[in-house]
Amino acid sequence: MASPQKIYVAIVGVGLVGSEFINQLLSIPPLNSPFHLISLTSTTRSLFNHTNPITSASSWKSDLAASVDRPDLPKLTKQLSALVSPTQKVALIDNTSSEDVAALYPTWISAGISVITPNKKAFSGDIALYEQIVAASKTVNGGRFLNEATVGAGLPVVGTLKDLVATGDKIVKIEGVFSGTMSYIFNEFSTGTPDGPAFSSVVRIAREKGYTEPHPADDLNGFDVARKLTILARTVTHASALPALQSFAAVQTASLIPPELEGIPTGDEFVARLPAFDAHFAAMRAAASAEGQVLRFVGVVDVQNGQVRAGLEKYPTTHPFATSLGGSDNIIMFHTERYGARPLIVQGAGAGAAVTAMGVLGDLLKLA
Image 1: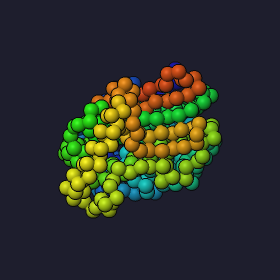
Image 2 (image 1 turned 90 degrees about the vertical axis):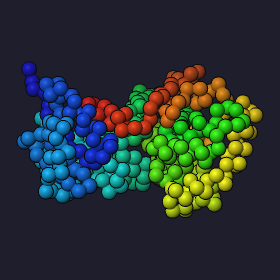
Image 3 (image 1 turned 135 degrees about the horizontal axis):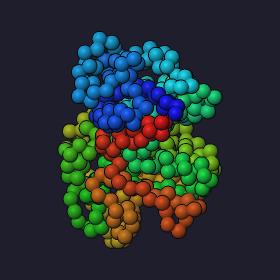
Image 4 (image 1 turned 45 degrees about the vertical axis):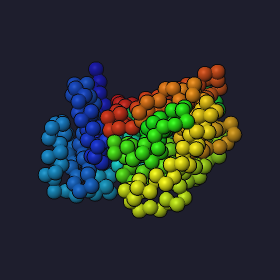
């Protein structure tokens, strides 16, 4: 019996998601695992040893901290490229949100190194980089790129869409609550009744619970949703008449930041001044309630009408976006030719280190 192909794994980014990913990877019983963890890179240290892989979930942090080597991605590229062979695969896991790291994807993939990541930057930024990544993956000896965790963390969103497109289904529309932060805020704020907590209060509590970025404006501007929509739109563009998005900035995004609060430098000041606009949000809630509807911040890829947009929309209190969400859940509906009468729905926890790391590990398992 032929021995299983060896897969070397290098990890860039060992923060919350990175640490959780390492622990999940090392929890796979060695006898069942083709993976050999040979490299770790943090913001200050790096570790590389392909002859003595990392196997201990309890000591990798101290081993990395003891290393005298500094991060050097060009050097790492050469080291990993040398390991690619017909009997050995190499996977680089980018657990950062760095644009500089994302810019290296075409180089790595061209060298036969597969890239797996929850980093949205490469797939939602300038279209030129995205096209370079796709082109590199189509070369004879190119590596693969796997990015399930860029949308919905561990939820099967990107993979489901790729399968629908690859099998010839026609995408009509994709709509969903893609932001865990926005999901929590509007699940609490808009419940179908005209009264409820003040918008500023909900945002403040969400921040205290760690659901928002330190500066809530980074969530309320809708850019996170726009990036996710760009990733999905680019997945279907080649199979539809949907116009190519030059970057996530081309998404029609309706920010929830009051114009008077644009550019507020700190999250503390932003939260302190937000109550002045509670009446505005309360009026929108009351208007929706009078129509038997709730407010939800959604993203829509409308293939049929050639539109990609993110913003606040109203849904009936009987709609799944009103009845099926809890906490910071995500929910995504795929309206397709095959799923015409009833859309295909994916829902569940769409944020958090554990489920994001699971999405990354699930992609890595596809290489085995």
